[in-house]
Image (cartoon, rainbow, N blue to C red; front, side, top):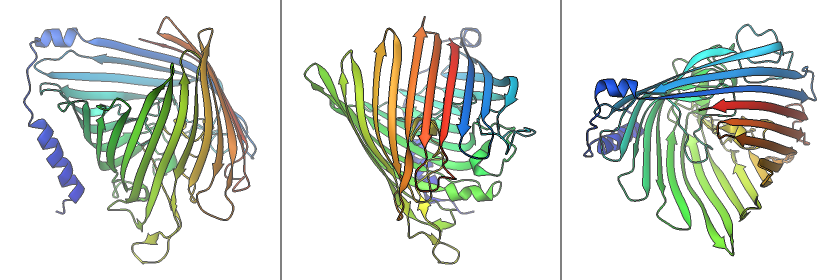
Length: 434
């Protein structure tokens, strides 16, 4: 049996962390089982979608209920179980991509399929000093969720079947190491196209992930990461197109400027084909963002994000030129980036450049936000991929209740207007959690 080099590195890193000395908790088993914490989340939401294409407008009124229980620790051991159910209300008229959905191919997509699933189910161990170990289905959010996240905006969130270790033994340092075996995606186990990557409910893999964060500098946090995605070629052969090795570094910080704050973020990542990817390629990711926090007034930012494209990609089996290969982030919370209309959930073949400005403020207790995006391809003679305006207003009261209104208006560009048509989306929601 062949053992992949990066898997050996994973095992070595995890063994080092697990060898650290630890302490045992003093709770009894009964106290651990009965003294845990109940969590609940209920969200009622309406989403409408209008697109300039042959599809009928979508209208989705859904309610999501999530109920969880986390035990206390007994000799360092604990457990967490969380179930989630999603139901469509009223006259359903949207394509959820779920098995049996009669609106597939006739209406615009709203990726909130009706389903009842186990959202999280894991065992934990905290008996080692400054270390938490989890095994099972769990929520993983790293940094700003640009590479690994829970897709928290969708009603059925994304969770991971994984083994993870978080260690904080070094001063101001958090080391996260893990091994993911399956991604439980927003389309649920009811997906009508489980072998199509864009809408699959599950994605099996054997993927090591590493993330090291250092916050010892007063002016910034610096993060280094490696995400070595290795999709299971036996169960979903086409998914290996997303098997990639990504290494990156991120700096995120602020500095005082009078009574306000200067904000800045810089990030760079290099991505190449993973071991079972059929295409040989290399491409880059870059983010530059600056802004100012006017204390008590507003936050303004301007940013430039590039997901590159390799025009010299080669098919490994033949050695011949392949189609352009663009930078991909398949485990990300994609809705938070490149516009809320979700036009670029998959990076265009010629890559994507996103220049954006944003403003956020609070008025009479209401959080208000606006973002404007201008999109272009990274390569090619024609680059205009359109622009988009995003608006949001949300109000939270008694800490546990939130109501909100959100809007996205995407205008198509000269490049591929049929693939990326004019799109308007509106959301109205109310949420209760504890």
